[in-house]
Length: 359
Image 1 (cartoon, rainbow, N blue to C red):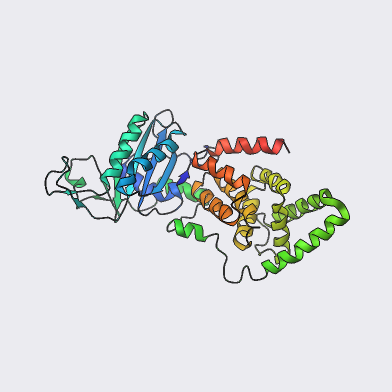
Image 2: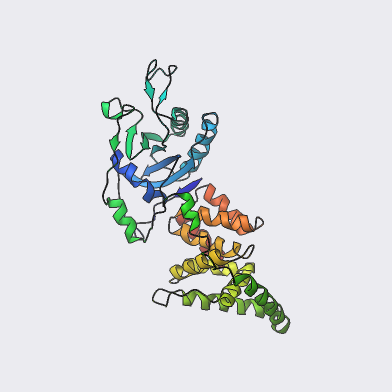
């Protein structure tokens, strides 16, 4: 399940969307990628009840699992305490013929995934979340499941607006780059050909050097040297510095440094300061080029960095990488639980500050 949350107004322009067509067009910007065969819940809140809040996405479930999926999605959305929600089904499945559906009558076409829609409406209503609208987005057009007008009949639909929307313009100011789909989003952390060719050998060399250094200065001294290596690498990634890949040995030094839980936890502070963008760039490079299980540390830190920006989809991708690489990574598992519970970026920021203060 993927989540995304609007950031505070100081970090991101506040944009309101109310027209169904605008909502359909906004989905990729709310999620960070173009969804396919998905069900999306968009929470609405704020003083007027129209501010976009938490957005939750899941793969479309089979009709037999619709109620279970609806329960999980509603539970996640409730964490943001929305006043209302919009349900959006994104699917290329054709209309159905269902002579058992009283709403459409015998042998009339029905929009697809009605079991999923029915389950979500029931669960949201039971949770005291008003359902503002239920939309189907398919083939560049949108329908409203509850609309009786000709434009919403199966086979009709209304074109999704084209052009640059207010939300798209706001997304550009935050540097958001849309992925074609979730797989393409995950592929951003895949290494380019040859990027890992020398890293594995460098990790072996650095491991030997670090062990020898620890015998000379002790593990405490070795940890401080590891932290210095991280800070130096962050400085190389600052905006304005030449954009060149880290040498293999320097990257390996960072990977081994972050394998130390004390260094990794200390590195959490970098997501809160002036070097947040540089740290995110470093974690991205280390995740992409790192070898398992050494890539679990930077992938976990990357999840924190992007989550604080409100990019829940990429946070999920980074945590998938961390836990695939090292299933026993405690911090990654805790973050996974928090993301599944839809912890907001503001709540995460507070938890990170508390954790850093205890170091």
